[in-house]
Length: 225
Image (cartoon, rainbow, N blue to C red):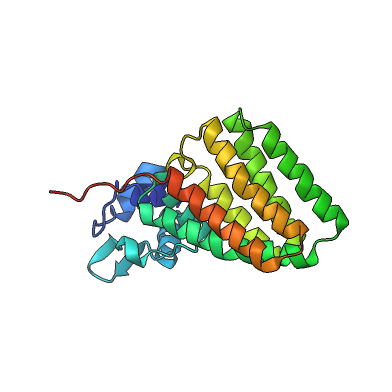
């Protein structure tokens, strides 16, 4: 199933293409017809495939895919099939993390506030090592989310972030100067949370995520022709 998802998302099997026959798939993967049928059924559930009696099994257009399915999301980000999916990931992060930053400003206890300050100190210590800084960045955001008490939002963002950071197009190639710029925004988030200013915390987090993305966002591929 995962191999077929990769082939579809990676455009090895293009939109509208017909899936190989059951015997061909059985031979290619060394499995039984039952295994192939279960895999195809799963991909149909992810809306990657359309099964039509007498017409074969074809690949659905990108717009039909169930991008809420973790397997499809992971493969899509991994293959960077569409820059738009990365844009969507940023929008989801902005909406949820801004809300959680505001919640953190209202709910965080003293221990949580101290943890946020410690995470900020780690960010400042790692600005000259972008690789280590990236890990500190993820930890800082997670500390804010933990302070919000919003377990569902935190779980959703952690899943999204784990997949997004596997994409070089999403991460970019940050320099120490990029890290210093990001820390200005990180500090604005922290200061608003420490001041118990929920509105400012939410705005600062939204501005930070959007601003960081716009600085590292890759250019769109030119249209064919």
